[in-house]
Length: 269
Length: 343
Image (cartoon, rainbow over all chains, first blue to last red; front, side, top):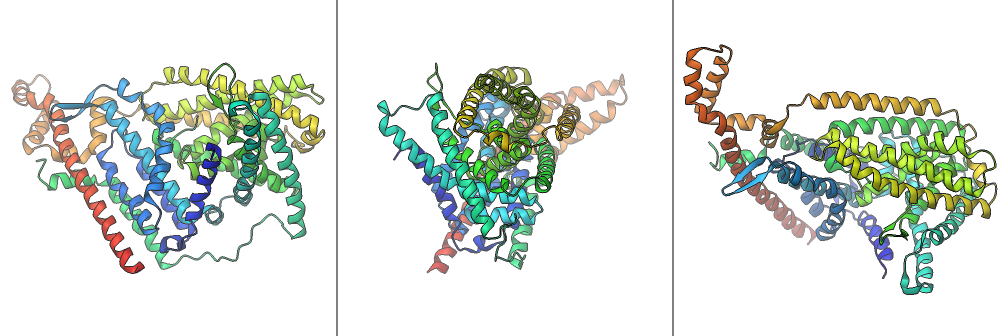
């Protein structure tokens, strides 16, 4: 299987996880969106050299992965794929900030290394939170939740459309690339000119499809809003989930738990 | 390059979120009242197209590397600036959720850097005015290169600004910009060339398509775009003032590592008393007693912060291990409960 096809199927897998039926899957999408956003803000709001203080935030992804029966290894693999992009800029930190900050016996860590580690942890925590949101909720429900959170309807409908047709069009792109690869020498990548012809044809088909979709939807009375059978109502579980996590996040944010525990264990006066 | 959550402070991230959200709201309202219904499915499918096209890489001539389409300018040309902006925003949202490209807090920055500068600014002020009514293929090609390059240069400057304002990456603005701008010049040239070729192909294959779909009043939104641009500059300037008021150096770093209270409470009572006495006497400079007092606490003054850091760092490491153990404990218990419930 080519790299392209592999990434396509990988894309579908995250969504398929959201069809689970655990308590977490059944929570109101609004609650999950809000929890995720406040989690990310809390994680990111630490200073550049925070490392220990970020550890308690691991509780959230681990608990949710287990509770929601998301495959932990798969989620970790996805996060590792993301890491390199975000670390490019952070990699300069160890070279630029050489001020000693941490002393562990003979080893002295400079501020740059500490902040680099901190950046790594942030990437990890913030991206796994996004994957968990999708894995537990699914894109269509996230979009509907967003609509209930007063995100403009046009944007939400747009999100749903893009999401729906990504799978259709990616399949078409995969087919095109397979045809190209089979006919090309050594399966080389297309150059700019060939690429634009390939993609141009894909675009033409896309536009043709959009026209058909529009006609079909007009026939069925589409007026610009998405109607769902599902009723959004906050239940006790939703309220508990949201308030519980918000409470924990603010505890983790304002109390350095590892430092407290360390002091409790008698390592600092 | 996508802006990343890890390099972003909440202040900058949330400000950009607010700006982007309001511009999206504005774009949505504007489109809802004006455009025909045809555009809703068209926009959606065009966004999905960008996604699919990004999965195909092309080789960049002269180098061994490969690139893919960004698509902002293409969407703006196909759908008009506002619809293009909205469409690109939805593509970026899905990328942030599924691939953590950038991340959720950075989404505001990314939509702004990649969408606003390209779809709104570069399209409305470069592509649209220069393209004329019946452009030749050559003209389309070169103007789209110009517009894409301009948009991407601004976008990468945006990344530099947001990163520097956030203050998490140590790289100063100037070398960072010197690193980013040439890279994005190359990316912009390629993006422009691909966009130009695509547009020319479309004009040949389906004449009338592009003219048909452009916003019939392209000049109407310009005032708002300018206002948004200067608003961002203003907010950015204000933020940088606030940011520079932060105390700098090791002291600040130490304060942030462990939190203010931890440091002060982790210091021994002796240190604290010495510190307080010192504080008291610094109000009375030249007083004889001060000297001996600071000399007595002289060690304390230079060594106390480091010592305190060393202590908090050991405490921090032990504490982190304990935290991890606790979390793993919770995980194990959850698993056990699950097994029992699940049968």
